[in-house]
Image (tube, rainbow, N blue to C red; front, side, top):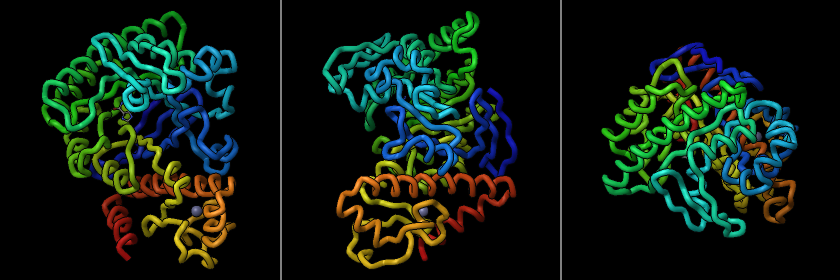
Amino acid sequence: MDFKIDATSKNARACTIKTAHSTIKTPVFMPVGTLGSIKALDMQDVLETLGADIILANTYHMYLRPGDKTVAKMGKLHGFTTFFKSFLTDSGGFQAFSLSDISKPKADGIEFRSHIDGSKHFFTPKKVIDIQNNLGSDIMMVLDDLVALPASQERIKLSIERTTEWARESIEYFRQKQESGIGVEQNIFAIIQGGTDKSFREKSAKELCELDFDGFAIGGLSVGELNNEMYDTVEHTTQFMPKEKPRYLMGVGTPEDLIENIDRGIDMFDCVMPTRNARNGTLFTSFGKLNIKGASFKEDKTPIDPECRCLTCQRYSRAYLNHLFRSREITYFRLATLHNLHYYLNLMREAREAILEDRYDEFKSEFYKKREA
Ligand code: GUN
Ligand code: ZN
C-alpha cells in the first residue's frame, strides 16, 4: 500500500492512500456496507453520485451469508457488488461480540452463534484472514478481543494480551500467504485495544506498532464512554503510532467526533450513524441535526440544508421529504441516505482543504460557530 502525508496542520493530517483499486484522500469517512450494500443505495449512487473511494463491509456477515466462498466465486467483493473502488473489511470480532446471540472469547479465538440461524462458529485469527482473502478486500482487519466498557482491569489486561498475541499470529500468517501468492494486493491493519486506560493503551499500541502491519486502528471506543474520555484516549494513543502509516478510528462517530479526532491525528473513520440516522429521520446539516418528521416541515419549501450540494438538496424540499417519511415511501430512504452521506463525505473534503492550507483550527471554530447560530 502506498501512503503519503500531503500536509499537516498541527496534529491534523491530509494523506493519500493508494490501494490496488483506488486512491483515497484523507481524512476519509468510509460508508458502512455491512452486507455488501450501502442500505437504500445502489453502487452507482455510491460511486458516481457520492464519489466514495472506499467503503466498509463485514467479514462476519458475508461469511454467514452468502458465504465467503460464494463471494470469491462471484468475483470477490468488487465483482459481486460492482463497487470497483476499495473495500475495507472488519474482522468479525466486533460483530460476534455485538450481534451474535452467544459469543465466547477464548484463548485461541471467538466462539459464537449466528444471529441468523443459531448455528455455531469459531473465528480464529487465521480463519478471518482466510475469509478476508476470499472476500478480496483491499484492507483487512485482524481478529481482536474487545470488551464492553466499563470492564475490570483484569478483563482489559486479558483483552490487550490476546489482541497482541492474535495480531502476531495474524501478521505471520498473512505475510506467509502473500509469499505463496495469496492476497498479494491486500493490506492488513492491527487494532489497538485497552479501554480508556492510558497505560493499557500505551502497551497495546507499542506492542502492535512494532509489527509489520500496513496501518493501525484504534478500537474499543464509542462503546458507552464519555466523549471526552474518547478524545483523551485517542490523543494519548496516537503518540505511540507511527507517523508514516494510516491511522483508523473504528466505529466513530458524530460529525463533532470526526472533527475532534482529525485534530488528534486520525485519518480514517467509519460509522453507521449517517446511514442509520437517515432512515430514522435524523438528517445532518451545517447548522446541526434536523428531524424531518417534525410538523414544522409540512409546508417548508426549502431544502434540508441550503448549503448542501447533494442530489436531494438540489431537487427536493423539506415538505416533500417530510411527506415521504410520514408515508414510509421507499424512495425516502435513498434520498435521506444520499444527503447524510454527502454531508459526511463533504465534511471530510472540507477538512482536507483546511489542512492543506494549514487552517484546521479556523475550520474547526467555524464548524462549531455555525451550529450555535
Ligand atoms: N468496530 C468498532 N470498534 C471496533 C473494534 O474495537 N474492533 C473491531 N474489530 N471492530 C470495531
Ligand atoms: Zn443535501
